[in-house]
Amino acid sequence: MERIVFILAGGPLPDQEFLRERVDSIRPAAILCADGGAHHAKALGLVPEAIVGDMDSLDDETARFFAGQGCRLLRHPPEKDKTDTELALTEALGMNPDAVWIFGALGRRLDHTLANLSLLACDAARGMDVRLVDPFCEAFLVRDMKILEGEPGQTVSVFPLGEAAGGIDLEGFEYPLAGAEMKAGKPYGVSNRLIASRGLIRVRRGALLVIRYFKAGVFPAGD
Image 1 (tube, helix red, strand yellow):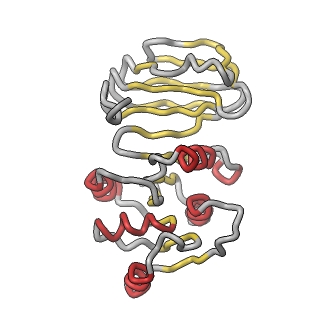
Image 2 (image 1 turned 135 degrees about the vertical axis):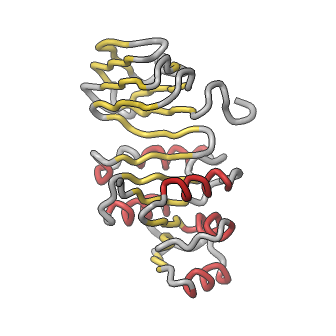
């Protein structure tokens, strides 16, 4: 059985039942909160193993509540060069997991969303299954090859992260690729679709950011 650690970040999580279903079905080895992500945990009656961050989004009452439940409060100074989610990810990776899933990281603030997406490329996460998850989609990085298990019709978008990516193969998709190259400024990897129950994504140079929507044709309101 995979050892999966959940991180609850402080971004919006409007469908909390989605998170509860993931907790019940996956049964994570541990739950960590990045600062204000503790409010999501409290709303669902979850006690995280630790809350990590500068605690600027955590009120004293909530902090005392979780401390009384045996939760560790890992405080960092406000003058830091790492985000609370990055600090929580570092803590999670130190727990020797097979995967880390981060919830509440794809919110309304574009700068925070970009910061969280960039965590997928951090050196500490290399070779690890780290993904950002919300009720509509998940985002993860492919550096070599990944078999994507899914359903026909799911939208899957692929972008180069950082430098240009080359030697890209896509199999099992409506728009397949063989030995292709992608670079910033030409986002032709957007809105592809699975045509089978599994698709292959391979990249030989660079890295690919992959965003997969769970339900065919279902996207956040307004998109």
